[in-house]
Length: 191
Image 1 (tube, one colour):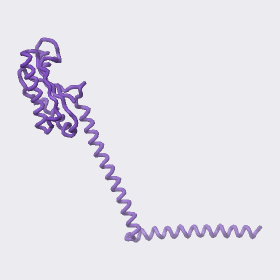
Image 2 (cartoon, one colour):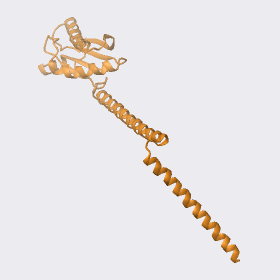
Image 3 (cartoon, helix red, strand yellow):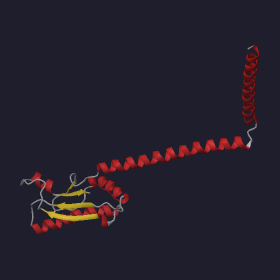
Image 4 (spheres, rainbow, N blue to C red):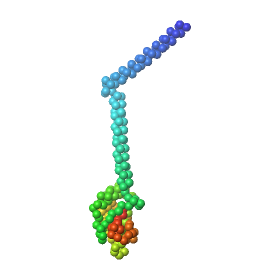
């Protein structure tokens, strides 16, 4: 029984010694690699790690830029009027002159339309009840046309623009007074 135990201790000792030697050899290889940076394996590993880091950084940056553009387009789309939410511009009596106060919004519409060539914009012209039906249809058309020409001057294609004049037929306010007439002299813009 004593001989069996001594053999066991011998095998255990030998395995410990081999493990220690193997770990020492691996450490020596690592130490040599750190002392000899010109080693092709070490250089290749370092370059691969640097490349992966740069590639990951580039992907993150590209993703962030795409997210910012997407968020900007979504924010712009959220501000654009739909059929249920029309952007209204008021006009002076018997005038189709575009007020400077509305030009900022129209520039934003133009930028959106230039980026989205498949989108169309509706421009509807209206007048108050003063004057004949024929005169008011023509005036509503001139008002819508003025808005259309402004958008075209900002690069919007005329194929993206739908013009309609309703004249005095669809009042925003059906009352018969100055405030109602002022509300009815308008152009409505929507997508």
